[in-house]
Length: 154
Image (cartoon, rainbow, N blue to C red; front, top):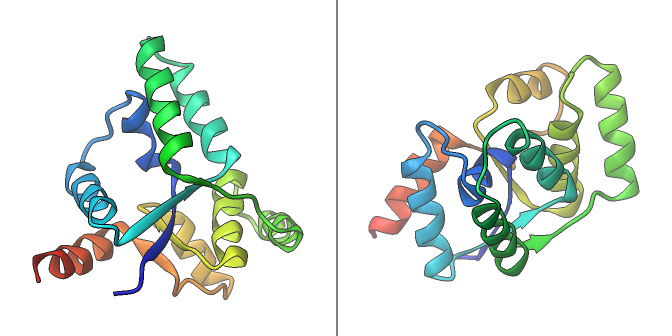
C-alpha cells in the first residue's frame, strides 16, 4: 500500500492539545495505527493551529498539556502551506458562499499539494460538491473508518 499523505482537519488535532471531541475515538485509533505501521504521514497548516488555539483559548486549559500537544504536532506531523493558487481558490470559494475560510484554506491546500483531506465536515463537502469542486481526494470520516479499518485488519 502506498503511504497515505493526509492533511488533518483541525478536529483531529484538538485531542492532542487537550480538548476531547465526542465520537473521535475510532478515527484516532485508526490514525495512530496507520502512523505506527508507517502507512501514513500527517500534515497540518498554520491555519489548523490558529483554529485549535482559538478554541482552546475559550476554555480553562492546562498550559503543559497544550505545550506537549503542540510539540507533538510540530515534531511528528509535516507543516504545509497553500500554494498561491490555493489561496486564490479559497478566496473564490468564499465568494461562492462558504463562511468558514479556514476550512476552505485546508481544502485548497490539500487539493493543490496533492494530499488527502480528512474531515467530518459534511457542510463543507456538500458545498464543494454543489459548486462543482473535486471532492474525490476528501476522506469523509465515516468512509475513512470503514475503509481503513478493513485495510488494517488484513
